[in-house]
Length: 394
Image (cartoon, rainbow, N blue to C red; front, side, top):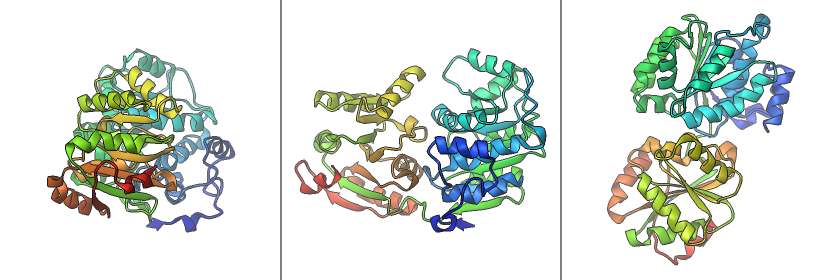
């Protein structure tokens, strides 16, 4: 079933079945009325159905599953069972810790509005505070598969009372090798529980999860939310290697926020340093940084301390900064799904955005094939420093 923006004009969150406290919390988050994916899925989630949602990054999926999940936990006096050390009743699985933390920033205030508690269970940070949260008792866990299985093996978390499980960006979890851990986790939850799966693509691993765990799901796809949407302008610049950094310097020399993707950590640091040397406020984000440093660097972009964040693909799924209107791929991705998730950092929630990919001349054929697979139309333009069409970006 496809839902368009016209279908939800004048519809409120309370019209969809959410309580007043939750609707108020959503308004405080800046969501005064539902996006199409939210209007499409919330009634089915509240009805207890399994849901399969397809919509690109930035279409509003977190509220689409987070708000009705909280509402369902409140049914039949569920908000009154908040004893110390209680087992969690809902689980949201995400592929990366950045995305898990981003989800928690949205779901936590919704849950708090009705007296429920969330916690994040992710790797890359000490487990002590996570264990303490579980001992105190939580209602909703937002987790990455590896750390969740680790704490379950240690006996710190009981999944048997999980009645609602969400898999967000299921395709990326499978790409990262989490298919079997996700299957084990789902089998440890209540066999009669509700499952919600959100994914941009439905590849082999995702299909296996759907076949085993989502019997007769309600299927929703948001019309007009694909990457070729008019809200995103895709451009491919064919460049000489020696022109790459000067071209990037030219494009990012502006007041708006820009996200630049590189293939390697070393090049991310090199490019960030080059931009700083050119007087452009920049920082980097990659896997060699510890979690605290990664959080600080992302916060610099969010707060406007820097205008440019240079990142490896560790950031492709976990960044949520609404004001990014330009994504530059300093290194072209190797496959189309990476392209989709990188470009999903801009043009979010219907805003305009531009994606520029820099490639050498010999990569044109591969780039064309990748764009065809992603169903994206982009003009390829030979480009060098000083070309007038560059000024259209700034």
